[in-house]
Length: 398
Image (cartoon, rainbow, N blue to C red):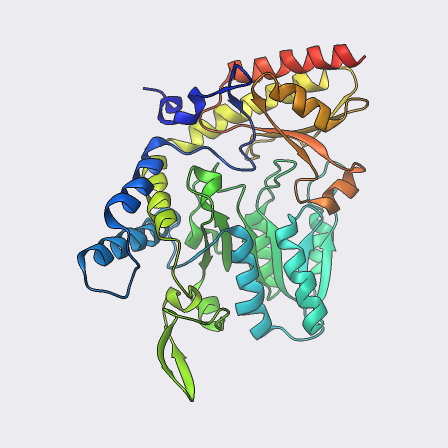
């Protein structure tokens, strides 16, 4: 069996055509094992976690905590806080760590290629407590200007940096960024939402202080993600959301809190999603991610070159080793939404818009782009169909 055989949605017809799903940077499809695991939880073990001793509660708790254990093993991480996704994870750092440890005038370093999820929380914090935000510019080739980054580090307390751009596919030199930041006394938060699908990350070896990611970018369910945290940074974090399960004791005069990750997981957690993510990680463990990444990057490179050869097209990004299999592009006369709708008529799903990265769009001088992104179940034939179809669309508009 091939990888594609594990994904039931790929058998679907869209507008009478076989589905060609090329919107993986937005979300990936789910293998049958994930769907089955979540259905099995709801059909056979549905109960709340941590609070009861009956059989169903025990099974639910075991299934949910198995997700945390799988994540710790997958990332070689000591502390794993389960969240609703990358966005909540970044906001958790802003509220639980930064609000407790930064004061007015402290600097947070960002880049021009950040997703809105790694911009807006810091803007809100700047409004509230007066921190300074410094944005690092890009070079002409759209890579991060490391000289500007180094200059910006003076007096900085935190660097919040995207690991791999969701628009350009460019993987930032995070190892160098982490070393430079730590040498200047700044902690590092990585937005790794687009990196975790394409590379196996060793959190301890990487030496970042925080790492945020989402399950749905790596064949897991939507609505769940995690924040990996170094032990010293974890101990500096204060509770963000108050409620059940994050406490040790509650009296009318005050409360004491859990000392483990539950301290930041108030309320009923995402149990079914945790079960599903654990199944996804087990499925992914059987895949050679490095080899698959090389295969997909070759498809992306071929696709980028073919798009460049279509009259009126401009492609953004470099597709170097380590970059993700993402191709963003525009046409000088065909509107992105028109192109996307005409492709959809042939069953081909792509993304259009600003991709929640408007500062980067401003840097590129465009309002938005078209974006195709490849993942484990995509192949060269799908890329060829995309190019053939787009050529026909451009010829019709010419």
